[in-house]
Amino acid sequence: MRKRRLAIPRGGGGTVNWVHVEDAASVTVAALERGQPGQAHNIVDDEPVNWRDFTWTLAEAYDTPRPFMVLIKGRCDYLSWSSAQEYMRALRDGRLLYLDGSGHNAYQDEPKRYMAEVRAFLLDRPLPERPYQDTGSPDDYEGPP
Image (cartoon, rainbow, N blue to C red):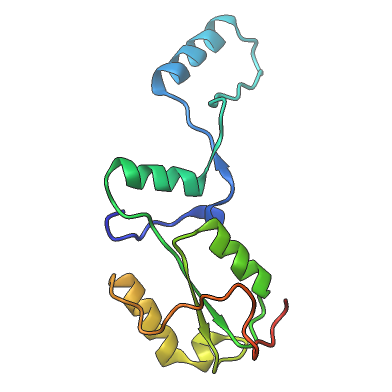
């Protein structure tokens, strides 16, 4: 967490249910004492939490920075621009990098630029290129909207 490198499943969406160990133990004992053979029991909390909120709360509890993501897109990417914007809304501390000289596969078309960004991210250094800030797609973007 301190290095902001924590995998957040499903881009911060999806939910996880937590249950206190004592509550899980009580339900298990009750199921053993009063349950019927073959019955299934779903033991969860009343309020599911999405992964983004969970990781941000964890970061706050341990006084560490929130994890962030770097999303690298090419000029003619297969993934839609709207999907990139959705990731950025879900992970407000994320960085969107637009490699304008690349085509479908940024990592193949611009390997030095791409790897420089990945390396900087993994080593917790400043990103070599400035993140893309606009809400709309760049003028020269050719991928799906």
